Length: 410
Length: 63
Ligand SMILES: Cc1cc2nc3c(=O)[nH]c(=O)nc-3n(C[C@H](O)[C@H](O)[C@H](O)COP(=O)(O)OP(=O)(O)OC[C@H]3O[C@@H](n4cnc5c(N)ncnc54)[C@H](O)[C@@H]3O)c2cc1C
Ligand code: SF4
Image (cartoon, rainbow over all chains, first blue to last red; front, side, top):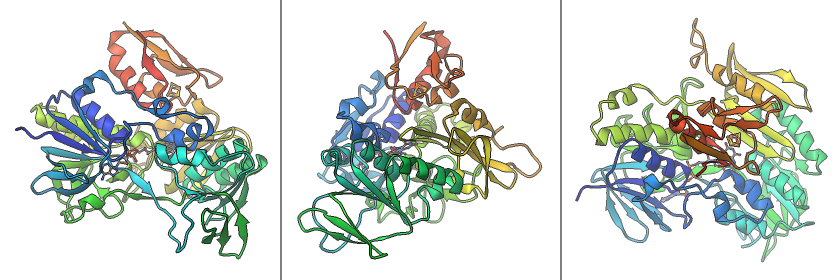
């Protein structure tokens, strides 16, 4: 039997990879394995609409286009191990699948608190639809909610919980929420807008204990402060889902290390010819913005990576001469994210955290505004509140400027 | 001829579609989405890409 292409991870990255393979003319076997029982769905609404409104899977599900009719969706059991030498994966329920090529799109999982004697109920993370549904049943008006972690997911969940009438306190390690992703100016601006809506912030703090026996009744901070609460939302970052690859010659240090054509790399840096990684789980070179490899956990990345891998693999399988072109052009995305918190609607292009200088380009602090994020003379990112067309106008000029030349992306 | 429908209850005017199919989608002066409900067949691939990149999954082909 001819071996199928196997995709591990049935979310946005996995779905888009399958689509791209079919669009590229690959007609052979295609199996998508996912550990969640749900067909692929959109994650950003999980910290927003899914918590706020009583929407279900259908409201966030991605449309499965007709070209994916004959794809096998093997949902509900994770891949537990892989043998890249003999080219096979094994699921937790015992199925062994030999592949011709493997696309890994397993994403991230939330880092969780592990205190001894933690109460079994009352603390939540938000990564899956099931997580969001479990949390929203506890977000009642008047509920006392502590959000631990002041990144995007934490701040969005705080805003949503507040809108539902909860008493919300965000506890964060840094001096300002969203400091690392946005820089001081914009981060302070967003904090004051959140505060105007009644969200409280306790910054420069770590959680050291969780009170409660059956369910969470409070949290204790390293300052000694105790905050009583009914619900704890843990939003303290994520870990890549790579454990099933252990034991193979593959670099899985903080994500799956891939090269410019998204081939997974061995420990010595040599590529696996038929193994690719895409989406949140992939650590890739992005020389237009930074010198090191990194993960970029933004929504537009899985789709763009999936397109690239689909082109390469379908051209390989159909012996299409376009393959040489696809291999010659390295992956070069412009990362983009958005975030909604109350009336604040952020849009960004580029990699903001690379900047050493941030300048207000348009608008005013406290109102609609656009900030430019600079590294030396290069604008490595743009981000703002409102002013969509203005922000979009800067999209094609973000990127490191090569010595003496114009922007790498122009 | 292809027919396009954007669910304006879902659309949050992120403008991601504009980069993929600029002859079909645009943001107006108030930063609100405007689009042509029909487009030439040659736009098919661009519109497919716009459908993929819409954060709200608001765009679909109309019958
Ligand atoms: C709450 C939330 C809000 C977000 N909001 C925004 C936003 O506003 N803007 C933005 O730009 N981005 C946002 N993001 C980020 C965006 O959703 C992600 O970048 C995107 O979902 C990544 O897609 P992916 O396919 O790479 O990984 P994922 O969507 O994480 O999918 C990976 C899938 O693989 C499965 N899996 C893992 N291990 C295995 C295994 N061993 N076997 C089988 N299956 C496995 C997982 O269960 C999961 O279903 C948000 C993310 C979250 C969680
Ligand atoms: S990408 Fe989607 S949400 Fe954004 S403007 Fe286009 S249709 Fe609206």
